[in-house]
Image (cartoon, rainbow, N blue to C red; front, side, top):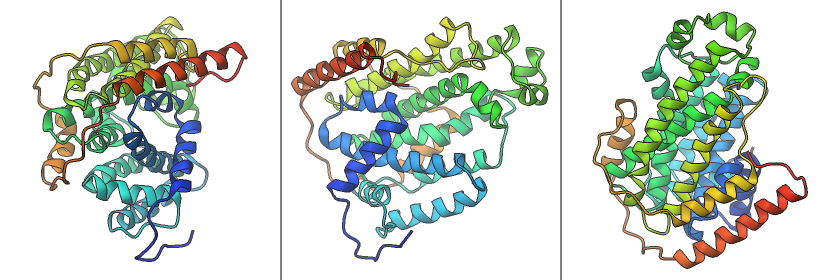
Length: 349
């Protein structure tokens, strides 16, 4: 891939369209919730998630995953310096990092977590797993908070809670898929307490009551964090709250679907039906915000909040007041989701 020059042109309309397309195919749950964001925030959210998706795919794809991480670190360093590679996600990321004064430590934490993936790291207990989730998902929650123009430590702490909760849900959902790829994220202490040998399970993953108990325990840990995260939504701009609440509701619903499927993440992959997503999107728009609760960040995520506190904030952006537009967007999206289901199209994940 060719390198850009120091005076590379800024991200253009085609770059933003490419970022949007990457999220539409790679993260349909986020894409659904993102339609509730104000347009300017949504555009930067697509650019941010496109780089995250690109990074994740580079480590999960073919070839040598360990070789991908140094290249990703170089791409991040160039974007942070304002000299991105000649690629849509890189140009968009460079603009986003500068516009929102996002400290390099946040996207670097994401790459640290992906390096742990590449090394095949396993996790002894829940705190160790939370440290991983803070890097690959809490960091994204913190960056999204900055994109929405909020830098308050309390809001960042709750955003990290939400990111970690989502990652725990992903891990619970993808147990079988991960094991077949040679990866194990479930806390090994929990597996042993349930009577499962981690190495034996990884060699031959199979559903059963013992695995169901571990998955239920992980979903319970995620639910505690979803509850903590909910109180932070009130700290966001009013026009951004429905989208973040929608993401929180849709991801938590994955856990409920897992429970309805008998807590078997090996034989099938839990999916939230489009009609149910439509209901949750409507609920996200109508639900009132809870009073903020001042709680410190999880110890495993505190470094992310501290990194933002050490970075000079940008000039404030004008507030986004588009609540009427949100109602129109959610009605349009509900119609699209229902139409997809009625014609038998692929259910969004």
